[in-house]
Amino acid sequence: MEPRLFDLDLQLLSDAVLMIIAIFVLFLVASYFLFNPAREMLAKRRAKIKDELDGAAKDKEDASLLKLQYEEKLKNIDKEAEEILGDARKRALESENKIVAEAKAEAARIIDRAKVEAELEKQKAADDVKREMVVLASMIAGKVVKASIDTTVQESLVNETLKEIGESTWQS
Image (cartoon, rainbow, N blue to C red; front, side):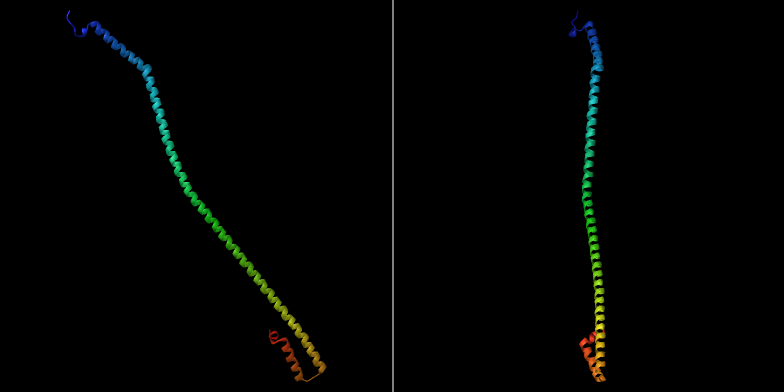
């Protein structure tokens, strides 16, 4: 026999080919029953992690949007508070003006009443003066009749009476 390289004969080669085929079949079976489920599990896990990351990114984006909305609302709250205070100031000013106007109207009514009362008192005083003049005139007439004196004495009595009454009351 001739020396062979690596001692390869036909039996060894056929055994090697069969073993390679068996390992390949075993690899296919193991791949079908072991590797595919593991791959599916890894794919599901990848998908789950991707969904969670997408959900976290979406939640972060929503949180940022909410933060912006709340900051905008806070800015608007300051504006609304200023508007409310402005309205309150405006109403207070209107109320103040109304109260002042009512007070002025009441003061005007009081002044008008006082003027009317003063006018009535003045009229009453004038009536009293007229009554006194009538009484004085009748007294003078009585004195004139009693004394039956001449006209110069009468004029002097009238002038004297007028001086006692006062010319200003007689003329008004």
